Length: 198
Image (cartoon, rainbow, N blue to C red):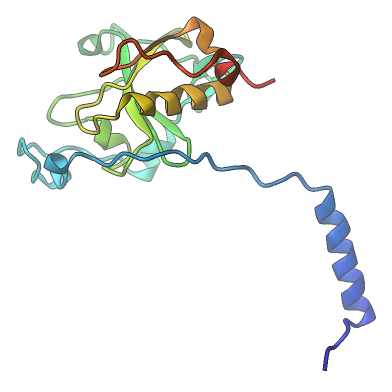
C-alpha cells in the first residue's frame, strides 16, 4: 500500500522543492589526473626514503596558511597580501616558490624549500598531486611556472592542469611563461582555455 504524505509533510516537501529550485548548483570539483610520489621517497617522513633524510610533512594547519589565492589577477596569500619572491628572506630560492596542485584543485605554495627537509612532497604530506613544480612571483605578478619536481616528476601534461586551474582562478596566462620540463616545445592550452573567467 502506497501512503501519500500528510498535508504538513506535503507542504514541507513543496517548500523544499521551491527553495532548492533557486539554489545555485553545487561547486564542481576539478577532475585532474593524479601523479603519485616516486617510490624511492615513500616513507621519507620517517627517514625511510632513498636519502635517509627525515622530510617534514605539513599538517592541515600548515597547509591552511599556504593556500594560493588570486585577487584581481594577482597571486595572494590567505590574508589577501600579494605574494612576493622574498629574495632577502629566502636567497637560496632565487625568487622561486615551490607549489603543488592538490587533487581538489587547491594550490599550496612555499618559499621555504630546504633540501633534505622540505620538498614538494612536504606540502601535501606525500599524497598524489595533479602537478608540482616552481613558480616565480613578484609583487603578486606570476612571471613563470613549471612542472619541475624530483619527488613527483609530473609529465608535461600535468602542467596543463596547473595552467587551466590558474586560468579558472583569474590569472591571465597570456602574460606568463609556462615552462614544460621534459617537453620544452610544448605550448599551454589554447588562449580560450587559459583566459581568465569573467
